[in-house]
Image 1 (cartoon, rainbow, N blue to C red):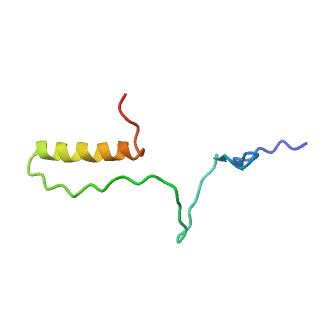
Image 2 (image 1 turned 45 degrees about the horizontal axis):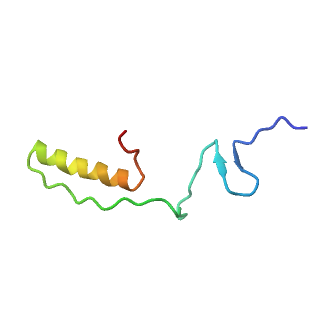
Image 3 (image 1 turned 135 degrees about the horizontal axis):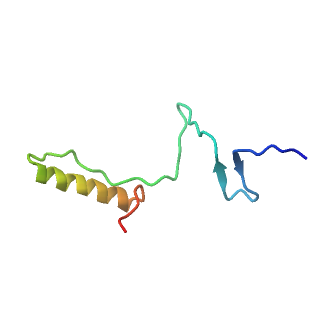
Length: 72
């Protein structure tokens, strides 16, 4: 019996792949199925309060897309 443990493997049945090493995506490759956040327009804020508003809108869109954990 071997003592080798693979860092990267697909569990029986193929429902789950575990990456314990480095996942390298080569140039020209693509990844599908990831969430995409709604577009956030460039800020046109002229003061700190406006910038805070724009930044909070960006955070809300990232959270809504599942790209950032929501506040508890």
